[in-house]
Amino acid sequence: MHYEIFGAIYTNKINHMNELYTFYDEYKIEILARLPFFLSELVESFSAKEFYQFIGEYGGRKIYLGKHKSKLEQSLSIELTQARYDKLCSLADSSGYIEIPNRWGVFSLLRKIAYEDSIKNGMDNDELIRVFGISQRTISTVRKKIAVSRQS
Image 1 (cartoon, rainbow, N blue to C red):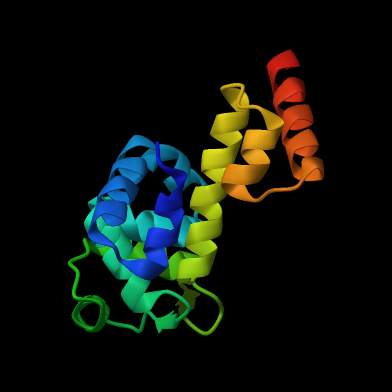
Image 2 (cartoon, rainbow, N blue to C red):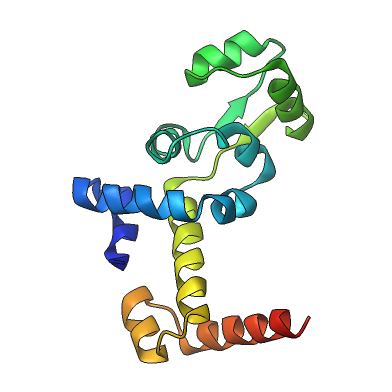
């Protein structure tokens, strides 16, 4: 895998975006599990391309859910079942807003998933530092976390 794909979220280079789509498809369950719950509920049925377009357009914004599902659907250009809309409303803050993570937050999440997976697969520390730009301390922390989870 070419890890420079994580820069694609900002550069929109088509070859990098295609790799990023593949990465999303391969790690979709992990990605959805680490997103804020309301966002996972909202984008669960999205394709990789739809997900990145959604984050690109609405990332970093607070979205008002409102009292009517149709207004939210129109403002986000999506369709929701009443059950999904009700679930989103139950997850909103007291003012009826949800906050969509920005592209940098999503980038950080994807990068973290990639380097944790690389550590699990035995990538050398020097290579991890070069490829992901993470510190030796981060590598040690993740390795300890992996060791503890394997003992459980």
